[in-house]
Structures are given as structure tokens and as C-alpha cells.
Image 1 (cartoon, helix red, strand yellow):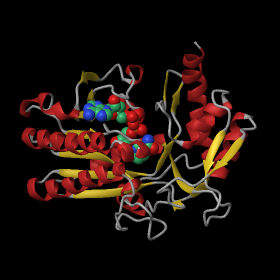
Image 2 (image 1 turned 90 degrees about the vertical axis):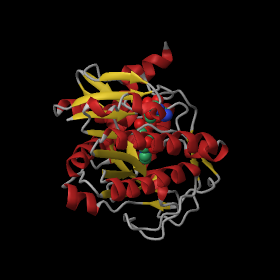
Image 3 (image 1 turned 30 degrees about the vertical axis):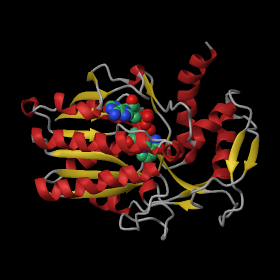
Image 4 (image 1 turned 180 degrees about the vertical axis):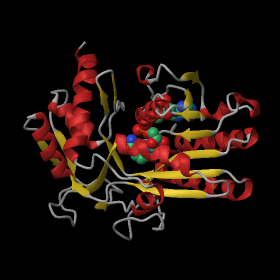
Length: 329
Ligand SMILES: NC(=O)c1ccc[n+]([C@@H]2O[C@H](COP(=O)([O-])OP(=O)(O)OC[C@H]3O[C@@H](n4cnc5c(N)ncnc54)[C@H](O)[C@@H]3O)[C@@H](O)[C@H]2O)c1
């Protein structure tokens, strides 16, 4: 297939691009590089440096695209509460412009990076796709708005749309010839921050809250290996059906507490990893664990790397090979 990948210079988009190319697809990456990295671009893909708002310049009716995989977004939930306007403008207005371009060009398939943040504080565990959607931050709200737009688009204009709601994505793509991983700046995710401590780039790790109603008092999250997540996109592309908006949660269905993550990072890195307890953060639910039964049943998706040790091991390998040398230059 000929595919447009937005956000293909970012963490998840670059790894999905790699898998698409390895599967024989032809890929055009559209990214404005606001948070992406040139080094992450696949040499086999055509790169267009542009905003998703201007996607119509690439998605012309005669360009013959078979599908769009849409990763481009701003992703920091905390920042979305202090600068909501840039989240609405980028994540929602930009996505609506992209959907307009898809419609005008008659592109039949659309796979969208949605998020567990659309559910907010869960009213059921594990969280199914039918759970109440009540985002507690602007980031989640901007993504939910796009999910809703895709439902209407599928019904009214027969788009084959798939939203994948990721839980906590972790790990890296590690091959002898190529390594791709997470490089967010500033970093807001627990595992890469813990690795910064292990690498001596940060003094200690802050954990927010140890009085939650969980087994050890710290928050519980569902982690999914980036390679498992990336594979689900290829399955989603194959499942896209005109007139349907399919929605799938992607997680392991297993929760790990913040303290458990710290233990695994200690084991993998051999670093004592000093931890400082900090107060709870506003809007952080105690537990977020996915039911991914629908993805397993309908897409035949089975996570191959479900353990935290595999995720932390690959993330550490990427960190040592790529991030540490850059930061010590
Ligand atoms: N990382 C996670 O744990 C996680 C969890 C749930 C959902 N998601 C979703 O997955 C997607 C990818 O996340 P990521 O971690 O790879 O983020 P990332 O910041 O590494 O990548 C995002 C990419 O999109 C590009 N981009 C942003 N706005 C753009 C615009 N207007 N036009 C063109 N390019 C633009 C950036 O330059 C960057 O390369 C996002 O949509 C995010 O909401 C991520």
C-alpha cells in the first residue's frame, strides 16, 4: 500500500514506519519536526516537512494513497492544562484539516493514535472501549474530539477508520543495524525518567503519591512494548472497513505499580535509583489497566513482549547507545 504517516519522525511513528517498510509498504512521512528527530526518519521513506494542517498539499486526489496513519500530536498532559489552546489547535484543528484532505483525496483507510487519557478516572477495571469517556486533561479531550469526528466521518463518508487507544507505551526497537526509541524533551514518562537517574543525568526519581488505594500505595499503569503496539497498527490497517469506525484499547491487561517499575529499572540497570516521594498530582487516577480483549479477538493481536523487564531492557539499550553519548558530548 502507499501510506502517509504523520508524525513519522517521532517515537511511535518512526517505529511503525520501520515495520511498514519492512512489510513492503511505500511510506511518505509528513512531520514538521516540532518534537520529532531527523535521525529517526526511515531512509526508505519520502520525507515531507510540513504541518498536518497542510496535508492537502501531499494528499492530492491523484497521489494514490491507500491509507493514512496519524501520529502527529502534542502529547504532554500537564502542558495541555497550562497551554490548552496549542493542544486544541494542533491535535484537533490539525486533525480535522487532515481528515478534510483524506476525504477530498478519497483515501479509504485512516488509523489514529488515540489514548487511554480519553477515559479519565475509570469507572470500571479493566477499562473496555465502552467505558465512560471523561478526560481529566485537555490532551485527552483533544484526542476524544478527533475520535468523535472519525465516527461521523466513517458514517457520513464511508471512511474506514480505526482508533487505537494506547496505554503506557515503553521500550525501543533494537536491531543491530538500527535502533529507534523514545526522545521526548522534556521527558514526562516514568521509565525514561528513571533511566536518566540510572545514567547519572538526574539525581533522583520522584514518585507522585504513595497513598493510593493500590497494593503498595503508588499508581498502577498498564505498560505495552512499542513493538507490540507498532504491530497492532499493521493489523488495524488490514481491518479498516469502509463505513466503520473501529476502536481498540492497546495494553497488556496487567498493571504495574510505580514501585514495581522502579524495582525493574534497578534490576536492569544495576543502579540503586534513589526515590523521593512527592504529593499526588492533580488528575492522576490510582489505576489504569486496559482490557484489550477486543484487539485480541478482532485483530488477532497478541503482545509478544509483555514483561516490564523486556521493555526496560530495550529502553535502556537505546538510552545507552543513543541518548547518553549525545548528552555527554
Ligand atoms: N508515547 C505514549 O506513551 C503515548 C500514549 C498514548 C498515545 N500516544 C499518541 O501517540 C502519538 C505519537 O506519540 P509519540 O510518543 O511518538 O510522540 P512524539 O512527540 O515522539 O511524536 C510526535 C511527532 O509528531 C510531530 N508533529 C506534532 N505536531 C505536528 C503537526 N502539527 N504537523 C506535523 N507534525 C507534527 C512531531 O514533530 C513528532 O515527530 C501521539 O498522537 C500521542 O498522542 C502516545
